[in-house]
Amino acid sequence: MFLDLSILRFNKNFRLLFAAQVISSFGSQMTMVTIPFQVYSITNSIFLTGLVGSVELLALGLTVLIGGVLSDRLNRKHIMIA
Image (cartoon, rainbow, N blue to C red; front, side, top):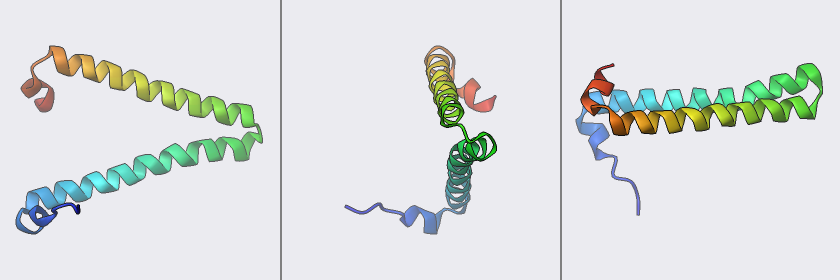
């Protein structure tokens, strides 16, 4: 039931990629929390804070949809190179 992380011990490149992905994910999640917090602390408006959250969600949804369409229609090798 546990994840097999033995590849982290044997493959240095994968270990570096995994660490970079964890750091990037942590930074992205921090941004998703701190921007609405900053908007609320500046404006004291729950409406504007919710609006910021809605715009973040809308942008995330649109980029996921566009990325999905592009990955289905284009050559994956060229996408990875780009």
